[in-house]
Amino acid sequence: MKDQTKILYTLICILSLSAIKAQNPIIQNIFTADPAPLVHNDTLYLYTGHDVATPEDTNYKMADWHVFSTTDMKTWKDHGALLSPSTFAWATGDAYAAQCIEKNGKFYWFVSTFHKKDNVSEGGAAIGVAVSDSPIGPFKDAIGKALIINEMTTDMKYGWDDIDPTVFIDDDGKAYLFWGNGSCKWVRLKDNMTEIDGAITTFKPKNYIEGPWVYKRKEIYYLVYASEGTKPEMIEYCTAKNPEGPWTYQGIIQENVQNSFTTHPGIIDYKGKSYFFYHNGSLPTGGSYRRSICVDYMYYNKDGSIQKIKQTTKGVNKIK
Image: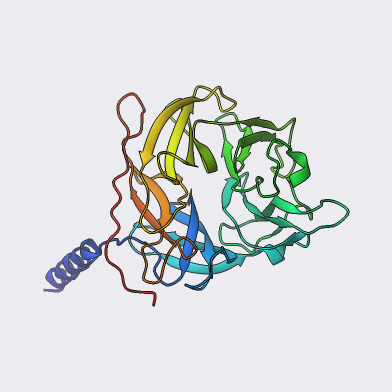
């Protein structure tokens, strides 16, 4: 009888778990943007921005960066705000797009915010890096200064072009930092992940606006980014045989999103499936400055090209 009870209990648990359905947006208790997924020890961690603008605001207000985690792609744990611009003594302003990546047992969180006007920089967007021994912190400023400042790139004649960092580590261990608004920029990183190694290269993929995401799959390198498309913003992409290019334009993979004129890609394989993270403005009182992160399946053709993303935002009512 005891064995039958145990079997029945196990079946109830399995059925209960299978009944859990993921719902887009996946985070519904706060407004989140700029998703950056990371898989570590069978857990998927999601690093996000945090919109705190009011419904009446007409510009971004991004207080800090949060971390969420899941093991089933359905239930998400909020680990809280683990980093903010105030973590960096040189920084001021908002918590723009960021990405965390692991190397040699340490976790490096590359962030974009703004630099104080001082004897180092006249101000403008800048990229910093925080470090931790754990994917959920605590994180601290890794170098006590910005890694990239506005004065290091001069092709765009405004102060907000050095945003949206993404880091890719190739099979040979070489690390590359990509970023940029208006133009895409890249530079090698040294093995310590906190110093650049060589000159910065600038280029302009077709329709590029911002938000690059770089990764490798089956010997193909992918550069995915927010683009002007036929209406700002969509997601388009290029491919290459080398992370240093040249990059070949491939097309649009995501059309406009609901109720937001920006979107932002985050791509990862997890437990045998490919996932495409992005943000829209679909939560109640949401919009372009009060965004919400969603995720959908991502599919490839046999030649490695990416199929169009099918957005599956459903009705939600968590945030008032």
